[in-house]
Image 1 (tube, helix red, strand yellow):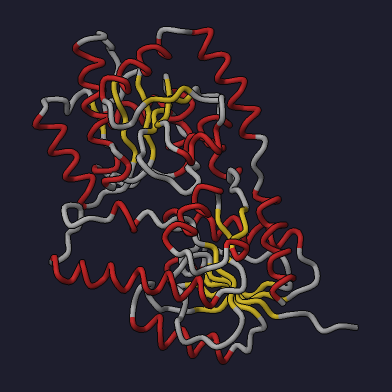
Image 2 (cartoon, rainbow, N blue to C red):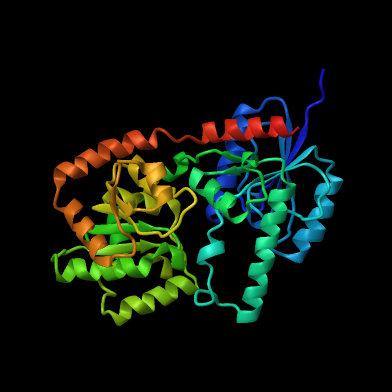
Length: 381
């Protein structure tokens, strides 16, 4: 009988931020479909207890090495070499650059190439520029070294081909993402939640980070116009973590005297998944003005829950959402305001988008993503 392959998964992002949700979903769905190979999932202390293997072929190993660090390049490198893997799967670009054996990567986007700027960073400018050069070199090296690179959309594939033309296009494999069922469940008392944060019955919802490419300032400007010109009586609820970017945005909101109309609950405390689900279910609309995305999962999560979406007209969104949403020009605050107002006032269009949205969401499945990923592993081995 053929000996099973040993596949290592860099799970240090597991269940944290965007790459972490991706890693969690892939690991959990690989467990369900792969009955042949053996897996070692490398985790950090913060997420070690979060992962509970359900397949006896999967085991977890502590790897307390921060991402984007020197210890990642040396300590983590030694750990995975000693594990004697047949293949290392890194669901990101930050591979241990000296690792000598087979690697498969999954790069979700290269947004930092165009939307990571001097104005947005909190780092010392020369150090920021140095880090950005290193970042681009590491991405190039990862693409050079990987047997295959999995991407979440054709838009990301095209970006990689544009920025790294020396890397063969056939190295990139598109595997769309899906919706985690955990993000669809909630037993939260919305009345208590609304009272805690001062949220009214009518509100628009945005869920994501407040990075510059997310374009949230323009959404605030459009919301101001919606209040003054369209007489919208509800609120705008912006759900994201507390960091430099959300604090800066809140100062912008206060300067516009909108702090009672624009609610940023993440500044008060961490908002758990169940609370986000509760907010989605009660929202008038889901609004997402991002200038660039790799897959753009949060509107899909809204569609699963029957929330009509009005989002930015960018290539990634056109690819993933087709005619299941209403689009606006993300650079034009008047168009953002007009499209929100149009959808708020058109119940028939809302019903149509809810129906199309639910149908659209059914097209995407983490099981299918895992099947493509496993096929890539098998081809690489």
